[in-house]
Image 1 (cartoon, each protein chain N blue to C red):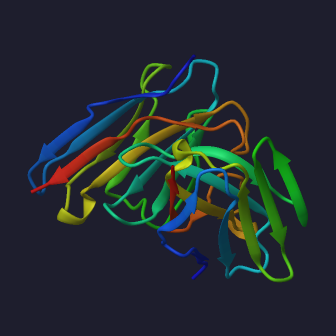
Image 2: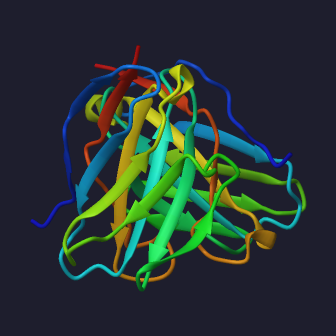
Length: 114
Length: 114
């Protein structure tokens, strides 16, 4: 059973701080990783994708991937109250035969305190 | 800004009844998806659809489920004989390309099976 694990939180950070969200996955051959933001009662919104080891930056967001440790993280710099949401990590298993069959984690709830 | 729309927003049905959930993907998108999220649980991939056929499906997507693009704009998910455990939020999504980087989710249909 391929799993994506996240700490459910809540993770509380003060406004302006860096929020660090972590994710581990059990399937060593997973190749593609995604971070989604989901506000309460709303649909997921893709914010980052990462495929290679290392860092990928997009504005205030940085995704980090370490395939040897089977670890993905998302850093949010200068956290804002509007960043308060649940962040979902998702992995695409190599053997799915395609490009859409992702496995989601349960998500980490982030609270940014003004 | 173009968006994915879903109807109805809420549906209540009796166990054993058939339900059809409707989605209108973004007009120039070619790939279509259904996900579900049981309350408090992870988002689960159900099925992806391209060129009028299923391209990938999960173990959840059994013979009780079917998808159809009946008229070139709508994309439907049919559950033939609903069970209590089908109660969930169902999200439709569409993307322009084969991967998930251009994927947008609809607002979801909350299905309650009594």
